[in-house]
Image (cartoon, rainbow, N blue to C red; front, side):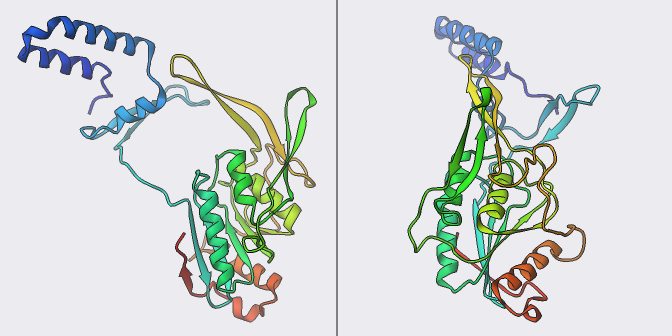
Length: 298
């Protein structure tokens, strides 16, 4: 297996020209253009497209990482895949709702809203919001996800350069979409950035309990600046700090109930259900296990 060959397209052009010698003038122009493209580089999305072409079996990536004396070589097999942004279920034993946000995509907010509406229609008395191993996303997406659970309430304070700051609020929503019951947010060390913003806002603005492990500790706001040559610069332009809680940048959000991930089953989810059952007034004897889940359509 060899590293990806950037001259492969040009080589294919030369082979094709041998079959059609009359097109040499056009071929030279095309090869010159290809050589210029290789010299100046290509946009990252185009590079991704090349790496996942149909004839790509395996590629080798060289990763430069702080603390490593030399580049790390990784061999990967590209595959196309899709992620369902939101999944949900009803824990029938305790009539509690469970919603897992898998990614902060453009479709996540609408799917989350639909999941909350469906769980309400089934009589859910409380909501477990699973934010484990969730990072990235934009503040706009986080704001829309927060709409049914923090309607009209502050999400965070965005601090920018030169002492500038502004309060970010979730928009109001219709009564049928708004969630008024208790919430437990599941978090761990993989919970970062917008997921941390959401978790902190839920504790400050909706009296939610955080269950699991201390979060990653990154409340930075990152802006992507695209350059003329197709490259991009990722720049930290501010931080989102909680409205009432302490700044957790570099430290992580401390949880209300600490539960490790080791153990059979999912001990963090089991504890979250137990905590939520108590908050929702469900007898604790009924919440010894997470019960049977009925999956939603989100």
